[in-house]
Image 1 (tube, rainbow, N blue to C red):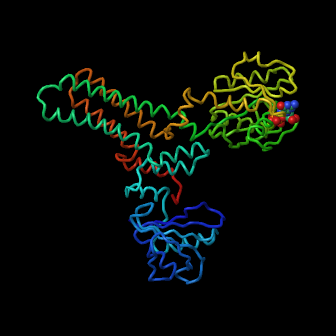
Image 2: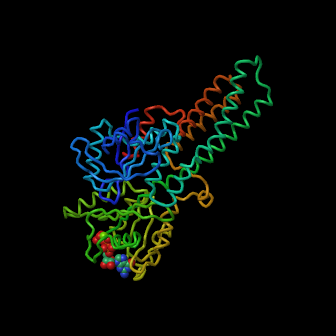
Length: 451
Ligand SMILES: Nc1nc2c(ncn2[C@@H]2O[C@H](COP(=O)(O)OP(=O)(O)OP(=O)(O)O)[C@@H](O)[C@H]2O)c(=O)[nH]1
Ligand SMILES: [Mg+2]
């Protein structure tokens, strides 16, 4: 394998930046950077070294160099890590020097791909590293960590073994048994397959909660001018992010901020609202509002109970009625009109952005429609967080169900087996045993460079 190099830490200024090389020539390339032909570091020991430009022999930086000898490294290949000072200029010079010495810039996820290829980890574990790095909440990070420790693979293992047992019985029946399999053996096979289907179902049903944890929710605040959208936005995100004034039409552009509710990442958007206007800037703002709404998982319709609903309120309501929505009746601290009744008490929360009364209720109401009934149990259990995994589980389940139907119809072992082999392949794709190259490429393109 050729030798790849990349910055493993984020771009920008920091105390330390880590440049990682992996591949056959890692050690040789670094020895040239150190201008030390006899460089033979003890594996896993850090040493402070001077890094030079091998052409000009000018000093670039002083850095800590650590060697990980194959196969005892992340990728399973020879790895050298250079922890230099976190200056983009220093990093650039070291990377350029490595490239001149015939290292190649790593493509996204290439280090992880090599770890996979060299059997250091299975596919779902590698994906878990990506998810851990990208986790937005503690709960999401914990789930990724469990997957990284191999929990998903070990849940799948007994299912695959069970499936294999059935396949072996049917295959040998096909080869050696003249007559049909005895009834009792058929029943055993069916029971086993039903049990596998049930387990797969249990796993894939956690995806609703898993996806929520990983991807979170996009939420938009809409309402006519001055009802307090920006004030509620600030109350929810916890600081004075948006400008609030008594002037109608204060917010002209959409604003976004991230926070979390019970470990669920929330991306909240404050908008210019929806209204007919001749003002050019505001009308662009309204167009943007429409886009934000179209993209939202939940729309919070804000109304003001210090006055009655207006025609404009009803117009907005009719626009968002068919979407997943929640009505925030704001300004309860100066309530004049009982608006709860006007909405038949459905999906409403009374709140005051000013006194923070009801804001916690609003938080709870936001996540409620997205939680599954047994969310308490799920909190402790392993969650399937990746759409790819969920899809493969469902496909495997369908194949087994189809085979069960065929068994009931006393179809030939051959057709039954086709479905079971497919199921086996789908389960194998989760951990990467049976994953094709273009699927791998697709997965690794979602990684960032240096991973
Ligand atoms: N008493 C009271 N006043 C509030 C409350 N929420 C907002 N206000 C006031 O209502 C006015 C409008 O608030 P904003 O948050 O700017 O309203 P908005 O919906 O974002 O308005 P635009 O951006 O203009 O569409 C400000 O003067 C706020 O101080 C509340 O809960 N109680
Ligand atoms: Mg506003």
